[in-house]
Length: 385
Image (cartoon, rainbow, N blue to C red; front, side, top):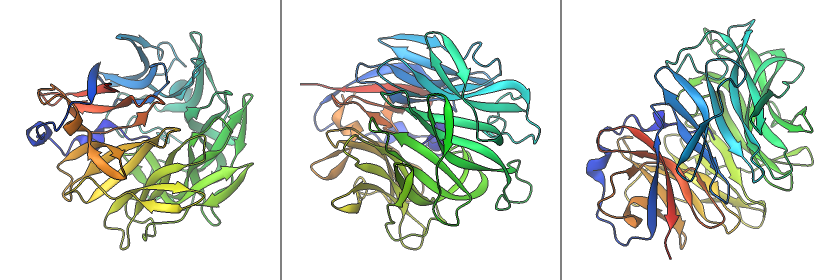
């Protein structure tokens, strides 16, 4: 999922809500400011972090490792904006980057203009970066835009690409004109994945080392600045051998926040979120072949949650949100319960941990934090023995 720091802007006084730590079990490493629209997206087991970092009115794909940062978005594909959203153990990085090619439909597919960034109306391409070179991945025939979200150990990439079919479900006045499909790239070739029956649009959000893919399909909607997508996700999906399976629902029909799978591990366990009955609230879920979709609930006192990351040990991380969206808490699941990560770090931490986005095999967590001046930072929380 493309959860950005804009998800936290309603929480202006989060630091005042930090509870005293119950026990210090994580050391927090500040990855540095990421700007209003930036965040860390992915981390390898040895600590290489892929992110987007905003400086001024542009955002750039960035790597972080042991206190050092590298801008890999310059020159990138020579456009103004880019983000690094996935990375594997070999240092292959994937994401989205603007090009210098004018978009014939002026779509703002990656939403850079909608986020208030400097944008010249050019196409936005999925990319693969390695050894200092960024190259664009192809879109589906007839399309002009796409993004790449995750890359597995075999170099297979999951994301989204437009095709050439006009999308009648996009709202009137929307800059989005074409359908966009969940897509996998293998050996540089794009393969469009099937959506749930009747859904015109979709996105592949993660791919494991076996080549299994997860994500969602649904309809075109107004651009969502939280998830940075035009997708209204109605069905959480798992693809195996190119065939889609619907993972179910926690009671909602997806017309609130939605129903979407965000990550999966190598055991085929999937996490995401689903609207509850009535679509007014949403909870994170864990899906396994044995149990189906399980409601993970929230941190006590909250009304909503998103499960965003899972590792092979089954540890789940995400964000829990109160009823009026004024407090956001990064969580880690322990003993079947969601625990506010801020209660597991030193009480005098200068950072409040707002979201937890991914977790490594060793249990290190990355996400978005807020400092005492209200600035957004990336962080890594490292478990202490």
